[in-house]
Image (cartoon, rainbow, N blue to C red):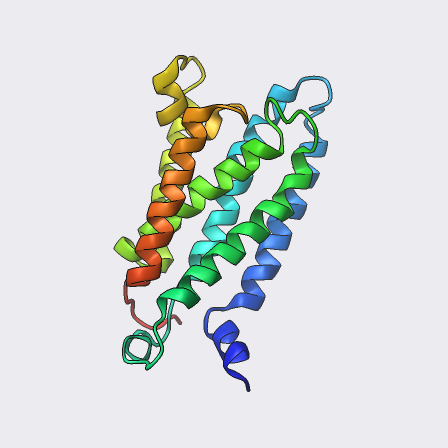
Length: 200
């Protein structure tokens, strides 16, 4: 086996790609049942939750079964980690976007792209701090809390702390999501996921 195939197997990339495709298919199916053409605001559950599910899938692929070997390798791992995370994030955004085509100014593709970046950044940072198995938990808790508690949130501050629930063009929401992705991706690229016991 070549090094690339071994890397893909060690990070469970085939299963990750299948899960991302399943997440995207579910998002498209769910969006079709919301009658969003009547009211774009009905897309909010898809815009908030589909990127969250995709980031959870990405988080599980950040697990390394051979952390000791990774740390003693001759080649530096940070470029591979960064490429791995960035490629999966781009793929997730590309796959989930068809669920919300149109209405770019409200809850359309820009909002999905922003939320995918932000959620994946939170997940990557959590993989470093908690491990890949639990990397989904902080993003899930935060996005769920914002989804349930931000219905009446307005003003400039809300675009920052409630960024997953904002329309696509909000500058504060974009700044927060991009900052979360850059911070999480940098932390993961430099440190890697927290070592864990072997998966059963």
